[in-house]
Amino acid sequence: MSVLSFAAINKQLSLSRRLFLGSSLAAAALPAVARAEEMAPAGTLKARQLPARSLPVPETVSEGLQAVIAAPYPPGWNALPEDAATWKDLATKSAAGAAPAIAAIREHFGLTVEQTHMAGVPVFVITPHEIAPENRDRLLVHIHGGGYVLFPGEAGAGEGMLMAGYSRCKVVSIDYRMAPDYPYPAALDDVMAVWGVLLAAYDPRKMAIFGTSAGGALTLCAIHRAKAEGIPLPGAIAPGSPVADLTWAGDTIMANAFVDNALVSRRSWANAAGALYVGSHDPRNPMLSPIFGDFSGFPPAILTSGTRDLLLSDTVRTHRKLRKAGVTAALQVLEGQSHAQYLSPFLPETEEAFGEIARFFNDHLTS
Image (cartoon, rainbow, N blue to C red):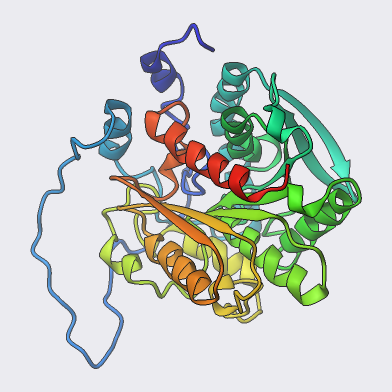
C-alpha cells in the first residue's frame, strides 16, 4: 500500500470514503424518501431563526480532510427502506463499497486477519506485523458501527484494522447479528458472548473495548450489562461518537443538521435504522440508549467526536455524565469533522485520533 499516493488512494476509495461511518448508502436507489426539512421540536421557548448561509471548508485541517469536508451529502442519505429485503440489500451494498478500503488498510499496515468464531459468533482476529512490547499480553475488542444494519462480515472490521495498525496491538472485531433479522438484544448478546470467551483467556485489566457510532453505543451498553450481571469490566473503553440516545434529543441533532455531511440530519436513514433495532422496546432503556444508565463504576473512557458531528451532543453528554459519576474520562473533538470522519483511512487527523486512543489505552491497561 505504501506505493500508492494519497491521491491514488482517495480516487480508488471515492465510493467508500464513508465506509465505517454508519452513514453511507453506497449509492443505493431506494423507493421511499424522507422529508429533508428539519422541524424544530415543540416547546414553550421560542426557537432561534437562523439566516441562510454558506458554510466554507475550513483551512485549519489537512488537505485530505478538506476534501472529505467538501464532499456532498451521501447519495440517498434520507432514503428509507420500506421492507426487510431492502434493508438487507443495503447492507450487502455497504459491504461491497467498503471492500477496497478494507484491502488497502490491511496492506498498508501489513495486518494478518483471521476469521473465526467465539461462542458461535463470527469474529475477525487482527494481528499487526509487529506487536508493541507493552501490548504483548493485551487485547483490544472492537464493535463496529453501521446503525445496527450495515457493514456485515469483514466490512465491519475496518476500524479494528486501523486500531491494530496504529496501536500495534492485537484486535478482535465482533461481527454481531444485525437488524432487521436480529433486532435488540441480538447484537448486545453477541458482544457479551464474545467477551465471556475472552475473559477465559485474558486478564480483563489488559483488555479494552472500543467502537464508533452504533459500535460506540454497544461499547457503553456492554459495560452497563456487565455491571448488572457482575461480569468483570475491561481496563478501558473508547466509545467514538456513540449513538447514546435513540430518542435523538441532543442539541447538535438540530444545531449541526445539514452541517454534518455524513449523517446529515435526524431525518436520515440512521434514525429509521435505530428504530428497526429498538423494535417494540423502550428506546430509553440504558441497554439501547446508554445515556440513560448509571455510569458509576465505569472503566476509564476516551470519547471522540468532531465539531460538525450530528452526534457531538451524544458524545459530550456521555463524557459529562461519566465525569459526574467520578469516572476518568477524556474527550477529543476534532476540527471540522462530521460524524465518525476520523475513520477516513490514511489522513493525518485519523492517525492523530487513533494515536490519542492508543496512548489512553496504554496509560490505563495493565501491561
